[in-house]
Amino acid sequence: MVRPTRVTNTIRSLRDQAGLTQAELAKRVGVTRQTLIAIEQGRYSPTLELAFQISRVFGVVLDDVFQYPEDGTS
Image (cartoon, rainbow, N blue to C red; front, top):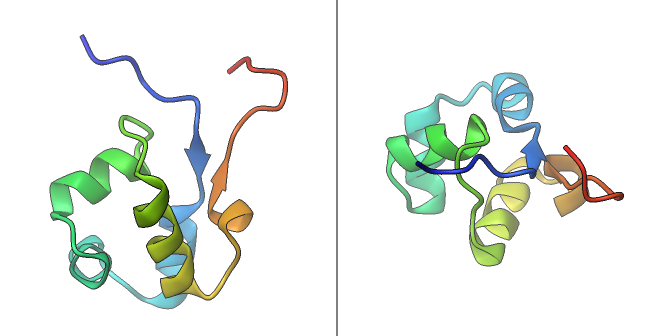
């Protein structure tokens, strides 16, 4: 069983604000729509490179897209 990641993200709200579909964002960063869905739902953590690519699509810093709990708890 795959353990969900503790990394959270704001991809969906950023995507909605930018008027992008999951398929459009996936294509822009070079992954499948299924991969993007898994990242968006917190079932998969992107590589650091992919995380930067996603943040650059939205024109924001990495911390505006991805968050990790400081105390190590969910």
